Length: 114
Length: 118
Image (cartoon, rainbow over all chains, first blue to last red; front, side):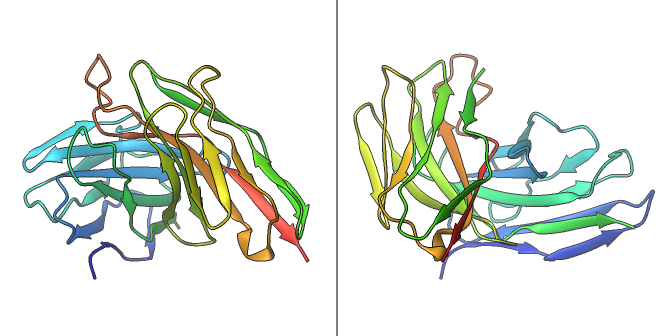
């Protein structure tokens, strides 16, 4: 079955560490997105990519980095520069840019700083 | 820029009660509108959508009508069940935003927590 897979489901990070969250899709979608979810704040866009080897900053990109070397993969790195990284992270994809079709979401990764 | 405003929650109802969750939006283009549902510890699932004015989206007893004149997309259900307890998000996609910076992305409301008691 086609879908989006995020891993790991739970992730713990020590202060000062970089961590990478995985997002893989086999839907053959062009566009992929990373959102951060905090209680009471809805979803905020971190980065998005509309095509391989290209990506754009979203509303809260500071302290994060991404790459898009393959169509299927859009990993997110939470760097030590992100001062408050504890949150639920969601990856999504849409078939093509400009499309009005719905986004498909992964199951999310809950990141906790310890 | 684009924005979505949802009624504040949480919303607590008894089983079989009528549900309304209000959603209004601001967009520069001609957006598509969506309702997503999130169950505890999971990602978001599409509940319903509407792509043009006066369209009605419906699924699992939920309905929402795209009202361009009031820029609204309110979610309704005539008789809720305990299994409907979740967080509901209103969202819009405005792929033809004049600035080009919101190309294809979803803008979400803050979410409304719904709890249904037996």
